[in-house]
Length: 249
Image (cartoon, rainbow, N blue to C red; front, side, top):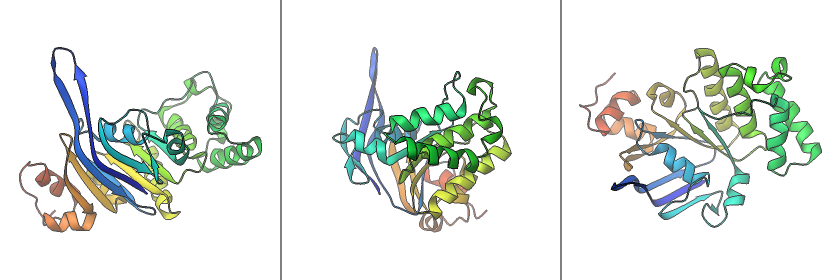
């Protein structure tokens, strides 16, 4: 489970007032469900996920992952999560297998465990055909497959997806969405950040709508749609953020 309570974060800007990225955000994500963190670009989604991943610290509030406090127990949090974004980088001078083994070692995996898991993810994500090529030579879709494999190599119970389909072709997007659904089916806690409402419609069980660093709505997807009299997330989302009224479409 992932819990966020009254998390706030501001960024200093020279000669200007601080940018209030998050102002009192709450969120609860549960195992076996996909929790959609929905908002336009700049809403605060990535800032929240970076706090949960212990990349940056919140100014105030509390957040836990698998019961571990992100501020006081960052190493335990990192061992419990996988993180994939649309800009997840790979080391250009390593091949996919070398990349996976390197990150697996950072997670403290034994050689035996590494052998098994690297073999599994290479086969599962179709990396076999380019496993010996340098990552700098791979296509965007191939790099993203390596990124997915890297994110779940240590079999984490919690997975964060931060706009993971950004810049991908339709076939690679399909593979990412299928993997998100698979994570739910095997009981992982999934937080999926996106501004693409059709993707959220497909996979999300619960939603938190974030806008200008504030939570505008939170609950099950069905509750949110019913509240706005809509059958799809896009018109309901537009109504929630004040862009016209929801329409039944």
